[in-house]
Image 1 (cartoon, rainbow, N blue to C red):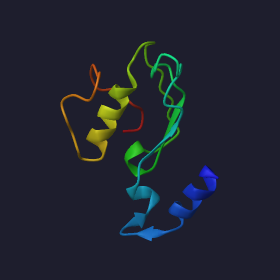
Image 2: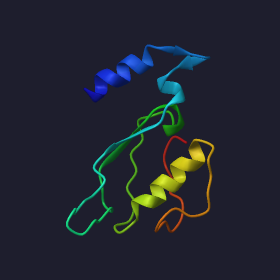
Image 3: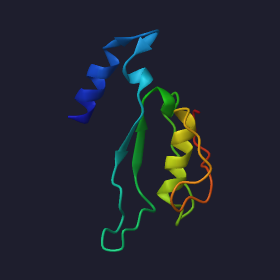
Length: 96
């Protein structure tokens, strides 16, 4: 279903590209251990124009807070902030 949704966005014109080019989606689980509310070591996918050119794979040290990724994504969509929740910094992501 998610792939079908993305295909529809990719085939819908918007400005100089498509709706998908103007969108950013974070897809995956938000908790690795829901009993502990642990949000580390998660398999996630970034999709859309602000995610980069695609095809990248990124592995970060264990115990890296998910909020570091969210902080980085805020930069990519033009809404930078210094801190988000328990973030400890920004992530280096491929294809930026």
